[in-house]
Length: 171
Figure 1: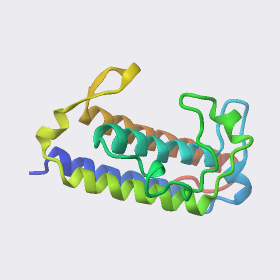
Figure 2 (figure 1 turned 90 degrees about the horizontal axis):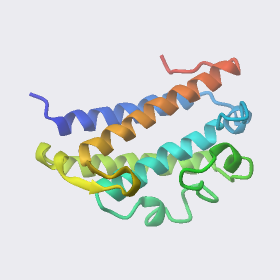
Figure 3 (figure 1 turned 135 degrees about the vertical axis):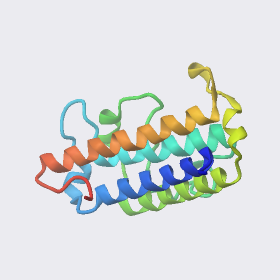
Figure 4 (figure 1 turned 120 degrees about the horizontal axis):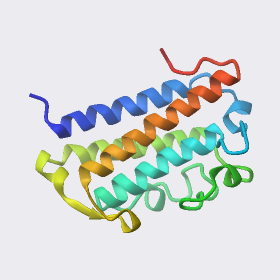
């Protein structure tokens, strides 16, 4: 029987593979294009996905230093972090984002998440974490919300590619 932790591990691996596959074939212009007044470019969505996973799963759930403030400080490919809860479109207008370095950072985040998940039991998923304005939440809630975030933004990335005549999803 598959445990909840094993399921999370599989889902996180699949979400990263789906995201990276969706990014395949993205031109530099489409990567940084702001497709509308309220839609962040692919580059900003990628930063949002990876920093969200880093700060929420590693920082909050695992209670570790996020990689962007530790082993990936000054080498994440992100010139300046977007403001928390801020306008990604506005931030992206001046953001300096190195695609290859951001992808390496993101892959390291997801590898660290897998290491964290491998250390858990299903009972650990019920541990509560104080998320400030989001209140007390169990680790499982954090893991779920970040999975949803990854898949949701991957869909937006696929749509932006499609609007530019590129293949969206990898299948």
